Amino acid sequence: MEGTEQLAHLLRALGDPSRLRLLHALEQGELTVGEITEVTGLSQPRVSRHLKLLCDARVLRRARDQNEVYYRTNTDEDRRVLVQHALEALSPEDPAVAQDQARLQNILDKRSARAEELLSELGIKVIDARTTRDVATTIDTLLQDFSGNTLLSPDALGRLLDIGTGTGTMMQLLSGRAEHVVAVDRSREMRLVARAGVLARGLANCTVQDGDMYALSFPTGSFDTVTMDRVLGVADRPRDAIAEASRMLKPGGSILIVETRLSAADERTFIGWLDAAGLATAALRRSVDNVACVALAHKPAAAGLM
Image (cartoon, rainbow, N blue to C red; front, side, top):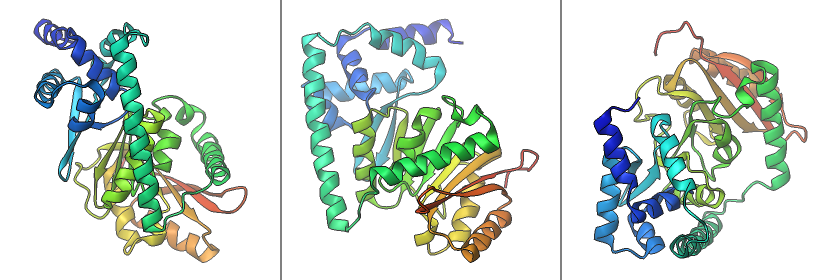
């Protein structure tokens, strides 16, 4: 519950048309100061001042990525309800809001074009829609078979960490079931690609950060769910990567791993890595077209933090 002073501070932060426009834009995904300036047409000093006030009121959060600072809306429940009510009062036909939306679309188009250029330069081929649907169906079946329907409901995955996000496939598939998603990747280029996908789909509960899968900067036990999509097959030290992923999990948390075309021998090795990390394997399931293998494992609820 908010105290009187805290509530008054929050209401003052929301009681400004320009700040509501900033929030409306950021509801669709992370943006930099420069991008917010471009969307609103406000001067950068004014934008920076508004952003500081909103961060002080815990309406926004910020994260640095090398020379850029990205802002996103705060997904904490005690702040979200009032913010959403305020934004719902904005009319999409308001000239300023409509203009902001058109400018935001221009930013999205530029991000998408840059993402395509980067993927081409890196020689990375995005998985096709059929394969994505196949993997999504396999994940759904696995979660339903071994966790009931609970992990299929909104916010059931809690705080989710996507390690080695790449193009952001797992974020896009699972963000609707998570309270908040943090996606990490060491490659700045892939982070730019992932952010383009986040903004294109309006995934406001997702943030993309720099992160080393062997030495993550989050405190032990920070997440309810961890995902790794086609990461271990290219990792130099896959066993260490799984151990670090296990460290990120709260007791009782789950890890979901997608890999391509594992042989029987690979599967035994893979299960051995999970066991060594203190994770109990629930199941390995192959996708319908056998392109991918999806594994689900849990961190025992009685286990102490590693």
